[in-house]
Image (tube, rainbow, N blue to C red; front, top):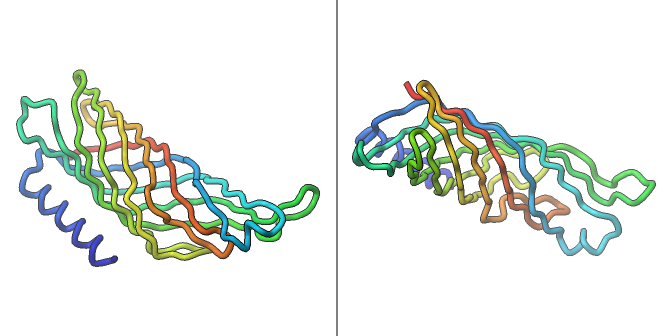
Length: 195
């Protein structure tokens, strides 16, 4: 899986080098939730499993490609690193302490591709995918892969661009002793500063 992610990142970077019109640093952060399913043994046990998604942060480099400067269509290609942080409890009964309680951090590498359309002046919308490889996690199976679908709306100012993004995880990217699967749903604010 590492080789697949490396190949995707190198392809995106080579495309950006051949056709880029702008590039720069992008910082993103937000929150969301995790759609979870318990393992059969955990589901049969008394109590519940709760995941409280706290926040996520990422830092990357974005290339903006215009096939034609007069066209309202453009493409964004990104590569970067991210981190997600959440708390979890299992087996909490009313009036009793949880059987399992803790926090987890997930670290990832990602490559993003979005197709965008300029609605009016600096206002644009876009959609795409973000192949993500989770390479480290405390408190669970760390090596997972996901390809979230992305919807975005952004506004371009003179010196930077601010965007709102929704990411919808499509694959099981979280597994623990008590959790059979977990899919991330995220709402993020991003700031892109082209050079």
